Image 1 (tube, rainbow, N blue to C red):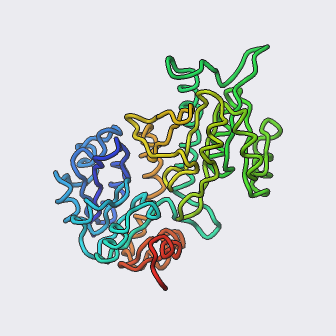
Image 2: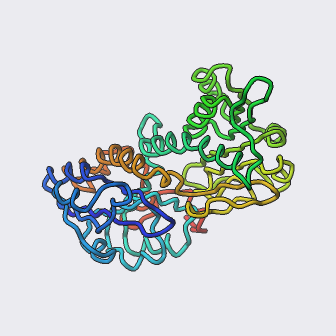
Length: 364
């Protein structure tokens, strides 16, 4: 079986799905691994490193698509890439199909693609092996991003996340107490910020209290609480996930208008459409914009900013499933893997996520 590792060329994407060590584990199982030249270079993995671990280098997207039975890519399949996809190909990506176009959805079905969305893979115990590690990393980035723009000259207000005696710390509001929220809360607390975290799941809020204690204020995420918190917040982070579906707008433009002058808003939910009416995707090369006097940071591929760490973490987790495919084949592995079955957007061109029927107006 041929595995292909794509070099991404959009959105300042520098991550790679599999490191040379990950490629080596597939080669040891008598599989062929093709790597597009330069795929790992930005993360510190040279073509030579892949070659030394048994992979073969190819020099174009077209060749990589053409040679791969299992294609490994970070960014979603786009309309432009549909023409290169082989019929019956298996693809792993962070697809976020709910925000893709109808043309992409239809193209995947027409070409009988088996598409595994790494962001929706889920084990039988409810854990999400890849999303969890990505969320942990993304959450830890929040204070770095927020601190930069709060204090940045000339844009920021000159506010420090922490404090000194006699000066209040920055107020941070986290909407969503999942892995991103918890990871971000821990990181903000470590810098001395005042942290409020909101969620509609009381059990999740109890877990947060158990992990972080009385340092963090937990609140039930009704509309009134969100509105109140936005008014005093220096930093707001939204990390809301409706698995496989568009994120609801829990923050209106009117609510954004009431925020502090040059407060920082980080929308981790931008991958699935965004949690605010003011959200629009940005690039790592130009990550912020000001709307209603609030600094917005809305980068979908946010962990591409720490691409080497992310690539190693992703390869460590993904290799387990790819090694199973190498040993058993795609069909048998999917049948025996709860996580891969839950991660299927399409199976041989058949839609496997009912929520997408509503999204694309398909009658069932």
